[in-house]
Image (cartoon, rainbow, N blue to C red; front, side, top):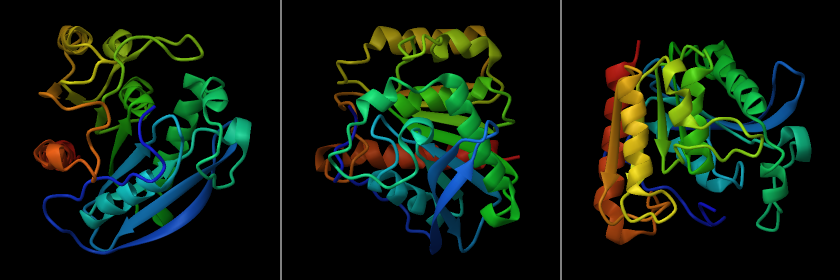
Length: 255
């Protein structure tokens, strides 16, 4: 598992502007309704980002993260994976998420991501012209996978995602999908993460290089899984660097 329910993302190194927020219910192309949280920038840059959570689905960490992106001029939507199996209600710390994770499918995640992208491109979402994804753990892998789903993304960012297979529906992982990826990839990984060996990270880098996919895979020495956390003072330098790299990646790849 990634984040505990009470965790919060680190603050960006440079303070930004204001944002307004809204709880949403979006509808995927197959008619599924799912929960989402939007944050719109007071001074939008034209870029938008879809936030793909860890295995818990949508909760406070990702809502706060959406706000931090909007404060940097990047309109954002964080969404919940479990509309098909658990409804659209907000959930507390007692929510039994793993049975729902096992029911997720890559086509379902792609459909929900597409609906979030369409929202960001709409006037209600800020008429964004460059869309990115970012995800964490389970969401990190899912974020990279969206680069192969013909969403027209400007880039895909993943924190400590697994490059190999392991999805509940038996779908291939990001490394196997590298030949179909259509946008640059940023990977932010913990060098002290026992769940993702350095050999797997290097395998992903090699797969992206072999497919001709522009990529930057960063490994933070000694950083654990889920190091991107406001409470980890000992990893503040890595958190600050991750923010700098994300914001630079978005600025460099905006269309």
